[in-house]
Amino acid sequence: MVVAQHITCGGQDLSFERTLIMGVVNVTPDSFSDGGLYFDAKAAVAHAKQLELDGADLIDVGGESTRPGSAPLSVEEELGRVLPVVTRLIQEVSVPVSIDTYKPQVAEACLKTGAHLLNDITGLANPAMVALAAEYNVPVVIMHMMGTPKTMQEHPIYHDVIGEINTFFKERIAVAQMGGIKNIILDPGIGFGKTLEHNLLILKHLDAFMIHGWPVLVGPSRKSFIGTLTGLSPQERLEGTIAAVAIAAMKGAHIVRVHDVRECKRAIQVVDAIRGA
Image (cartoon, rainbow, N blue to C red; front, side):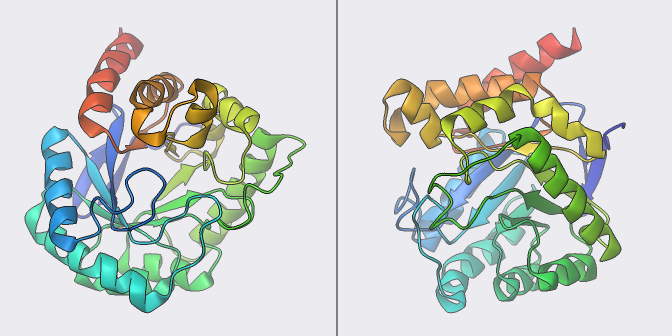
């Protein structure tokens, strides 16, 4: 199946002629990689602006840590974190702004203020998220996760990780389309209910997820599998992240979600040139 070559997002046409970069803005005190650095709304907005200058094609704002073992956050607390940031970014950056949430109340408030994309780690498990995406006519990122962030790394087992993720995608795409969603992005969920071997297989066989005809996003940035391989802390995983991002792009990823936009952008420029030679 031919993969869609562009999607409409925030009135912009996002073309996949090259690999796009989604910059991560965690408005959290406890994210595994940069928790607390951008917890203040002013710092988060400044960071997002820098990511745009560094070459981000989209900005993804999240207020709840989804690191392994993390507990859910209340709607009120998550809204208090992300809404001021999203509201300012809609006015102050020129790239589409994504809200990373699985809570309909948070999603709706951010969509009302102008957010351009929904990034849902639960793969639209809540029907209200489907209805909101259709009502506001925004693209959605459907991510695969086994379990919840609190439990997902407690012995995840697959008989065929690629096949089972593809089955999940097929089911969720059908739900999304029946609900009126027009633009879909698929994320196999590296690190979300996956062992080291599962994560490596996902990257090695990333092109297997292209069968659905929708663009694929991958987020290996600073993830624990890189730490397992290198023995390094999240802040020391830049080189491993660049290697994973380069492989993902070579395997056809349409969007890579990263913390280190400038460095990954430079690597992607080389990979895209090699792919297009």
